[in-house]
Amino acid sequence: MSNITRLVILAVALTIGIVGCSKLPGTSGPGPAIAEIPMQEAATGVELQVPLSDFVNNPGDQTLSWEVLNGPGQIENGRYAGTFNDIGTTDVTFRVTNGDGRFADADFTVAALYGFMGIIKNGHGIELLDAGEGTLETVQIGGNMPLEFREMLPNGSLIYERMSGSGVDLFVYDHDQIRQVGQGTGLNTVYDSHTPDGKIFFEEGNPGETGLYMWDPETDNTSLVAFRNGMHTRNAFFAPPNIVYFEYGNNGQADLNYWEIGTGNSVSAFSSDYPEEIKAVLPDGGVVFSTTGVSGQPELRYFRVNHGVYTVGGDLPPSVQGQQATFLTTSSQGLVYFETGTASRDVWAWTASGLTSTPVGSSSADERFLAITKDDLVIYSVETSPGNRDIKLFNYAAGSSTDVAVSSEDEVFEAALSDSDIIFAIETATGRSLHRFDVASSSAEIIDDSAAESCTVDAVLSNDRVVYTRTGLAGGLLTWNPTTRVSQIVGGPGTTYAGEGPDGGFLMNVVAFNQTDLAFWNGVSGQVISIAQTPQSEHFEGAFSNGVIIYSMAVPPKTTTDLFEWRAGQTTRMTDGAASHSIVRILRGDF
Image (tube, helix red, strand yellow):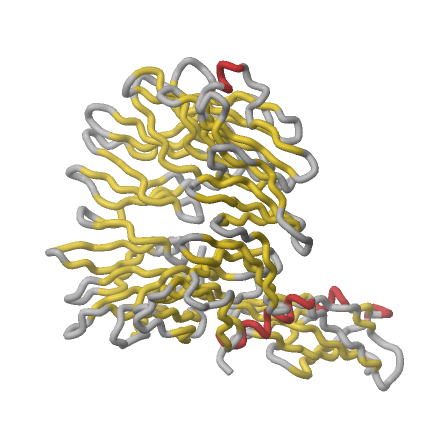
């Protein structure tokens, strides 16, 4: 049985919560005692370490010796180290012995998950990539019916759809079997969403009507959520612990409904003569949706089961409530951010717990939401005059805004770092410079201000390194380190950013004479390494934190593209089929 086809063995183990530990008394009498050891999770191909000495009671603090009796790995000074290359669960049994020869045996279970996993499109079919072992396994060949990957369930099963001539069919790749969801009789069966324990909500029907259903992978039973002749259901949103919200209607006019899992019929939450659209589910289990107000303007509402319906921004003056309300985003704490107005807008924060609104930017100028940082700080712009935008930062906890970039020039937001520091550009008539705003010190510094040249951010890597392009005589591809505050050029004109790579680095395209080669800038060594330099053009597909880089290339006389793996300086061809191969999504092992 291959690694990939053993995926659901692990899933079942995780679901039932396997915990390994069976203590066997030593034949020499009482000695070391071993407490229960919880199940350990490991990534395939990555060494797992477990401090076993933390679980041992050693009377007299005697010197202990350790031995692995069953399973991979070894124990040194009470610390276990082992590598698991196969997906699934493995029991490791060990023995600890004290200086008197008294011993105790115990075991613990290791659940090995994919450390490096991706979805591959093979023509119309789908394959799984194990970038730890460098292998591919076919999920299903699409033939003349394209397969589209949709989602991965918490237990590791894959959800995908088949675009057949008579409709859309829905499937789950579960262990070494393919399970079809829905009736599959020429109807359109379309994936919507899933619960944390893997129940799938899907729409099924024909162009004239669709119903909403829930499929339970444990029982293989399907429950009806909602169906009525001539009606359509769509956009199911799960809200813990047991509510699903969805839109229900016809002719483009949908109302808000909800269903409590395991109960009878669904219930209408809000109905009007206008279409309602779900925007977000909040941590309290409520839902934010859009509708149309009595004056014909778009507005936002909030609904929570057993609490009722409220207007988002309902505490604002009537002159503001009469303006168009546009949903923006939610914070990790459940704050709702929205804009009011059209040509000139204001930005607000709203909390469901108090049904209150807080102004983010509500002056006579035009304020626009730009982004929300990982620390829940809101970045927004203020257009003080045509062609002159300033940037500000709003802190809800402090109830105030900070000036990020305010001048007579035009400041443009580029990116936010993990610590909420902001990268922005200043545009002038002669060029475009890059700057960083430090949130902790409320100060700005120059990243690149080359005369008569323009800088544009291409990416911010997971380690906060900034990759940007500079155009002009000294142009090229550069990188800036937020720790050392130093920029360096890594590629000249004709070099472009391709994607994030391992070792804190990134891939770049090197273009010359209408042909593209692939190179890697290593963030540890600071060196550029050639990945692929052939007469053909190479295309970067994806990279994994274990150092594997995947790229595609068409090798004459073929015109379809195949996949190649680059690992530690060695290149391996992975495919040689009739159809083109490409990475659809990396599921595990990225950055």
